[in-house]
Amino acid sequence: MEQFPSDLKITALAGGVGGSRLVRGMAEHLSPQQLTVVVNTGDDFVHFGLPISPDLDTVLYNLADVAQKVEGWGIQNDTHACMTALANLGGDSWFRLGDRDLATHLLRGEWLREGLSLTEITGRLARALGVYHAILPMSDDPCRTLVETDGGVLEFQHYFVKERWQPVCRGLRWQGAENARPTPQVLAALQEADAVVVCPSNPFVSVDPILNLPGVRQVMAGKPVVAMSPIIGGMAVKGPAAKMFLELTGEPASVEAVAAHYGDLLAGMAVDEVDDPLVESLSRQLHYVRAMPTLMLNREKQIEVAADFLAFVAEIVAEERTARA
Ligand code: FO1
Image 1 (cartoon, protein in one colour):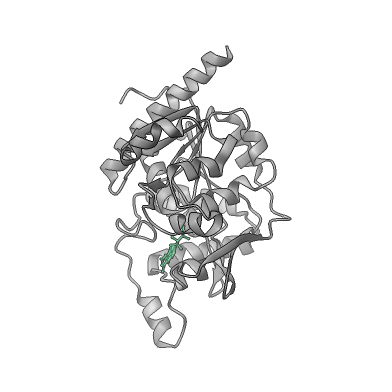
Image 2: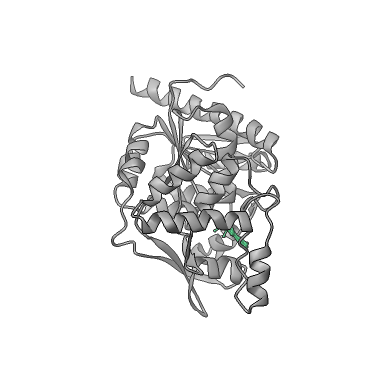
């Protein structure tokens, strides 16, 4: 690709696996000064007394190149001796924590008890794993996603992992939202960005928790915000995004539904090449639309897809600057 201009700064909003694939690709093209990642912490929960931050760890492990290749979360070649022993003792084993992964949660717990913030802890873990792009939790305050189902309100990981996202989702709410604030680092990264990238993460449970924090939308207003659609040909690559579109909006998942969900926030959106026939109609909703390959199932694809996507973002930034000059 043409070199992405070295003076442009991107702040990306990401959830877990889908987001971390694009982030991983972009990190190959952008220096740590150019790319900052703001990560959803709505999926966080406490399990066996350990503070688990699945999306932060997924982004971290992917950037450190130690993530499980197929699942996208957890550590590649991790062992599960602790989980096996725990299950043999009658403990709950529905949430699979690998032995090496456990070290992350043990340290996070220890450092939280010492008074460090989640932001500081994530920075320490990143440096220890040789990751120099900033990974910022959206907030240092708890703001936990709760899923309203016919069977009652479920904590996000109970809905997602234990129930395999099968219950019908009737609504979402966030425990702690009334007191949760974005960190100063998050607001500064958004303020300093030339463009904000909305990664191909679940709009409802990965991106909305970040956007809903007070001040986040305001600081993004007027900046080019460019998304990559998490919906390809009406389906989600992974997880319940397509199912949630139908259950929460009554409309089937589509690139138009993604654009409608984000509304005026977006200047542009990249859609997968299979959705090329929808680009014309989508252009009535959005100023900048481009179809391109977006599947990123291996490292090479992540790098290639990120290159095309960043070229699209750079064009939008340049056009917006010209329009405003
Ligand atoms: N996802 C699963 O589907 N099953 C698991 O047992 C599981 C364990 C797990 C452990 C640590 C971690 O950081 C993530 C883990 N995930 C697991 C993934 C994760 O819970 C979800 O993919 C995200 O929360 C959705 O973004």
